[in-house]
Image 1 (spheres, one colour):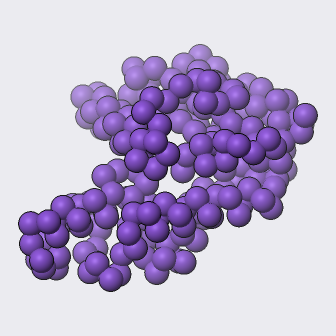
Image 2 (cartoon, rainbow, N blue to C red):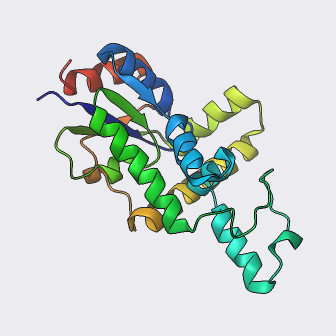
Length: 211
């Protein structure tokens, strides 16, 4: 069977994005990543960095609502991570953001011949039969070592980054898709890049995709 869409998911430090880029090149597909965030942000009238924060960490909206619960003046609160402070009128509700992100993913998939990286696209498109869902993973030790190599941080900081990334990922899947536990059976292919190189991983996915 040939697939029109390949969705990649995976935590930081797994080389997921490198594998996805190689697969897109092998298949002649368009690689879609931050474009989805940018489109969602554009339609919502929200800065792209705010939407990105919604997806990858504690949501801007959650922090804003927490602030509003303790004060009626949201402008009196600062938020970490370099994110600008918006008034309630400037920021859509979480449901709106979720709808925009999912709509962008679904519209992109309808065009076909795309590789979609992250944004939990595998779950947004779980019911589509022409979508190949790929999970790229690696052990925490391997992921931590890669973060040390790529960013130059200490081993302790890298391990904390892995733990924080995993917690944020689990929180996102639970909030946006109601997934209490991520399982291998939620994907069609699961790749372990502890030993599997990016070229070999990409070759396997390309074959499965019908190349």
